[in-house]
Image (cartoon, rainbow, N blue to C red; front, top):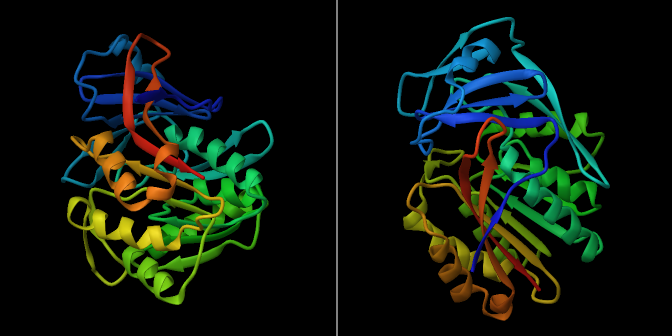
Length: 289
C-alpha cells in the first residue's frame, strides 16, 4: 500500500502551483520556479508577481537564470525546527533552479532522527547526499555519518549547513556513490542506516555516467551487503517522472529479503496554502529491521 506523506515545515510554504510553475516561501523569501508536474491552473495567479522576490527562467534543459522582481538576497538562512532538534540551511539562488533544500524531505529527516535514536547512534551512509539535510538529521541524533556526493561545491555547501546547525564530525566524501559503495562492500563495512536519493541521471566526481534505471539494481545489491542485518533502516527516495513506487518495492524485496516485511511506501507531496492542490514531490521507500 502506498501512503501519502507531507512535511511539517513551519518556515517553508508552497503558496500556489499551476501552469507548470510553483510559488514558494522560504522564510521571508518568495520564489517562483518551474514545476513540470503542476499541469493544472493556479488558484491566485494575480498574486504571484506581487509576492515573489524572484522568478527562475529556464534557458537550457538543466539551467537558467533568475529574474529579480524585488529586493532579494543572494543567500539567506532557513531553519527547520523539529520537536527535538533544529537544522539550519544556507539557501542561495543557483543557475540550476535549486536553492539548497528540498522541503518535502523534512518528513524523512524526522524518520531518520527517530531511527538513529532507536538504534542508539548507528553508523549511517548517505549517498547522493546533496546539501546534507538527511546527514544533519542523523548526526543530530548522535549517529556516525558518512556523507557522499560527487560535486565538491555541494559537499562544501553541506559543510556550511553542518556549522550553521552547530554540529560536527560528519565524514565528507567527494566521490561517485556507486564506486564508493562498492569499495565499502569489499572492505566488509557495515552500516546501521543507509540513505539514498539518486538523480535520474548525472555524472560522478570523475565524469562517471549515472543513469538510474541502468545502475540502480546493481547498487541495491551492493547496499544489501553494507546494511547491518541486526537492527537497521534504509530510506530510498526517487524523484523521476514515471518512476513507480512498485519499482522501489521490487528492488527492496529482491535485495533486502530479511527486512522485506518491513517496507513502507510513500508518495511525498506539498500542500498548497492558497488552494486545494497537492503537488507530487517524489516517492520514498523505508525499510526497518
